[in-house]
Length: 211
Image (tube, rainbow, N blue to C red; front, side):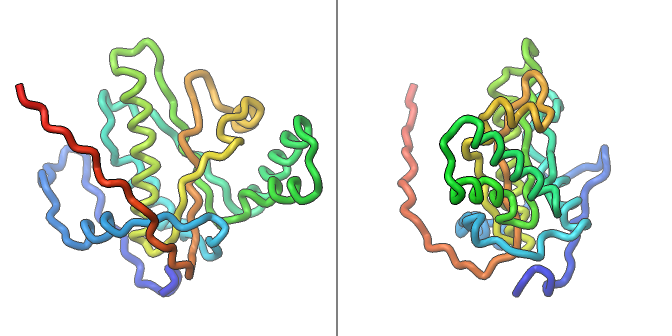
């Protein structure tokens, strides 16, 4: 059933200072995690999340481990015609550095049109802080994963991508990234009828330390 046809469900977020359960035994959550599978961005379509669903997604994304309560991440949203405008920027940057044919330029122009919503998760590291930089970066990665899981729990498909433009300095300048900021990922979200095939999963590598 497409997300637009499903009953709206808005989880109840806790209030500051509220005491929370140390566990949340839930078979549906375990089933979702056990069968979570990314949907290729090219297979995502309208409709995307409603404003209420988007607000919920971003609040869930923020509920990640965060040593020092630093919130070492922020979000940039790409929706509507702004997706096409950013694609034009990507095409110009690519063409300025590469021999690009029309096919490649069209691909770059359409990158952000693959899904109705793209969320850039920006990792923002405060350098020379008592909280290690690595822990700040990991928190941003956790925000990406929360977005994937929450989107799929709402009935959408989602994919976490970086691709070349996540690392290009001119793209970073265009997006206004500041010192200590990097793109942790672009999360593509939309409706889909695609049923992705389960891929090979490596067995967890497990060791037992004995003192």
